[in-house]
Length: 116
Length: 112
Image 1: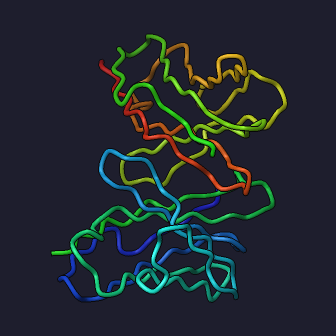
Image 2: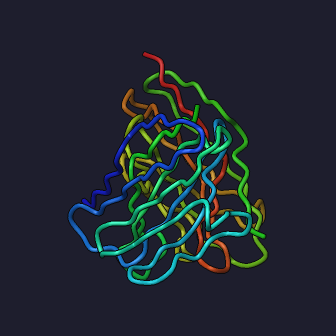
């Protein structure tokens, strides 16, 4: 089946620094990728939708200048958390869509970000 | 706005006994509903989906769910739990823009 990887799986960074998370579709081309955030004991919240070659569409309340998303190729999207603060500590999950049906999303294993 | 409520944050069953994970949804139109499973250190995997066809939906690994409009429910069931079913399960609804809205999740524990 379709596989999506994320790197790194865990990252610890200091407050004020930036960190980049990669999301790759390993065996298929993804025209659309999604970035989600999951707080402890809470559900996944969609942060943004990323289409290859165009600007990401951010959900209401998500700071686009803080969470930079780049989808430069059909197999790679990146999320950069800029000037990270402890409140940005969370579990970030990406997914990739292969076709027109919404449920054809394949999820990565997630990245645990801790900002100290 | 669409939303889902998973009624149990944790469910514990013995191996070989039935599994019931409850989900209620809220939608102003006919929704598409999904169940996803997440095993530790693995990506979310689609278990099954309802997209306005048959109300009883069969998924992978022996799971099934029934769409009940009158009860606004989409409960997930399995006749006999296996140790490998231990994971976190998410009930999901799609909104008008086809974005996925997730429930809070139910952690299933299977005792031997």
